[in-house]
Structures are given as structure tokens and as C-alpha cells.
Length: 437
Image (cartoon, rainbow, N blue to C red):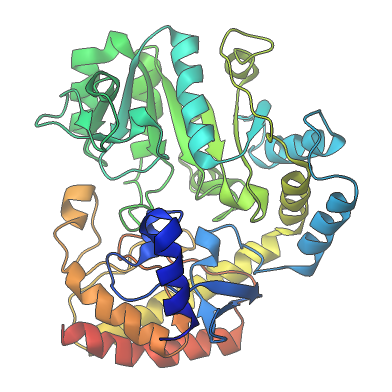
């Protein structure tokens, strides 16, 4: 028993499951989770002193690499001035301005107002309440396999038809609350049309991950995000674009910005941000047009509040991260993603493993299917049992992967040639382990 084992035993005696977020428990890969003690650049060190090249990156926020000196210095400087005030600060204004300035293309500015909150769950929860307040309607449309946080209305499981009211997807969620969410298949224009044909005058909003990254990486089909916006607006509903994961991760203006560059023009009504926007600290945000966002209290009737909203340490980390996230940073990560995705594909091909390496900008993942899945039902048909031996082989060789096949892999600007070469060297043995599963 090493230090990780003893810590996990101790944790399970005082923390449900021994973790404070379920995927950390290694439930889908088995074994003892690594308790991390420190991180720097592209590497993390566990409680037993073992170092790993990290492809989790705190599930996305570490865009620049772990413990970037300028980000750490910004947080330290902020801490000397006070940890929390419960009052407005100058930093909040600066961060909101940075967000609004980045999410634009020419004269198109989907973000005119920003509200800072503490978590992605809080951002999406507030966005939904805001959409209902702005439209006076109750129903929400979401897509199977998309994750928007753990508020009650979003933990809904799909019914038997494309426009069937949902049932609770978690204990503790009242059925009447779950029934306000309509769950349809992703990347399915027919399902989108059908749900609006049946319920269009009662739908407040459609919420969608800008690119799916919680059922593995599943990019929207060309034109699908634009179709969501057009369909919602034609029925008087709003489009909520969830960029908690992709926002400022795949492009200076998020996945929306990436799509604008590709010629897919659409304007969401509300965008939610998290992870990168806080630079690794607890911070998230939602933004949208002035007309919609000014429905929030204290200007409008939709209530939202938070003692730690706009926490000065989190704001400082977010400002430093966004200012350092230059086009050169994104180009470096894009190039690293191209290289590593190609190497992953080659290793699994050589091992004779049926697979695909789905992409959404610099995000990529691994699916044990011959073609990249386009929705949750297809993603669930993969030979996911092959991932555990693949994962453990990589870990034994000093590479830390997400402990689930249904998660994205994250690179950082700190992943240099040495790290990429070490990951590539580990891939053949991991691919062989997957093949023998």
C-alpha cells in the first residue's frame, strides 16, 4: 500500500466514495485514484512522489500549463489585498470587459453583459432561469449525452420518443422538475423539428454544448448549431450555448469563434463560460445581449446572487490567463493536438484496434468505434472495456489520462517536444493492452 492507497482509505471514511466529484473515483477504469500533491507546466506529481505527463489539465482550465508563474503571481498579489469582500471590485469589471471583447467577430457581439458566478453548474442554472424569465415559458430542450452541471432540471434522462417529457436521471430529482426538460438526440435535425412542432409555444430555450465533450468528443455536424439558433428563434425561444468547457479553450473566442471563422454564422442568446475563464480558480460566467442579461436582478426580475461571485482571487487568475492566452498559445496547442491525435490513431491502427479519434478544435478523445460517434446512443455502443487497460498502461508509463473513455483529452501550452515524444513512446504498449482486452 502506497500513499495513494492509504489516502483513499482515509478519504472513504469521511467523504462519500472518497472523492468530491464522482469521475475522480476511477469507477470506470478501476484501481486507486492518484491523489495529486503538486503540478507544474505539463506535469503533475502524486502523493507518493510519482510524476506524470498530464492530459487532464484540471479538466480544461490549465490552458497555459499548471502553476503558470504569472497567473500564480496574480493570485498571490490579490490574496495580499484580501480573500473575499462581498462587494464589487475593479477586477470584476476588467474580467467582464475581457470576456465581452474576446467573444465577437466584426460587428457581431453576442456578449454585451456578463454576470460572474462560481461554478459552471451555477452558470447554466442561472442561464436557464434567465431564459424562462425572459420568455415566460417553462420547458427546456437538451440533448442526450450533454452535461450542463448537476442542477435538478438538467439531470434528466430521455423518454421513449423525441418529444417525450423526461424522467429523473438521478435520485433526489422530483419527477415534475425533470418533466420540464425535453431530451432529444444530438445532431438530429428531425428530432429538433419534432420537439418544436409538438411543444414550440412552451419552450423557453434549447441548451447545447458548443461541442460535446462529456460523451467523448462529439462535434456538431456542419450547420447544426446554426439550425438550433434558427429553430429556437423562429418559435420565440432562446439558444443557450454552453461553453463552460470549450470557452477560450479551443479559440480566443471559444468554439463559437471557431465556427464563425469557418463560416457558420449564428448568434446565441446566452453563452455560459467556466474552467479557462477562471484560470483554474472557482469562477464561471454567463453572458448575452443587454436585453436578455438585464433581466437579472438588480435591474430585472430574475434573481441570482452569490457571496463569492466575482471572488477577487479567481478574478485575478482569470484576467491573467485570458491576457496570456494569445493566438500563439492556441496555435501551439492546435499543433500539439494534431501531432498527438495522429500518433494515437497510428498506434491503435498498428495494434489492430477498431477506433476513432474524434476532434473538436484542439479537443480530441478516443472512441473504440471504427467511425467517430455523432450522438450519445452511438457513443455508448463502443467497446469501452478496452479503455481501462489502455488507461493503466499509459499511467504505468508516466502519462495521466482522464479516467473515463467518455472524456476529452486536454493539452496545454506547456506540452513541448519532450512531453509529446514521451506520450508517443507510451502509446504502442497501451494500444497493445487495449487490443488484448
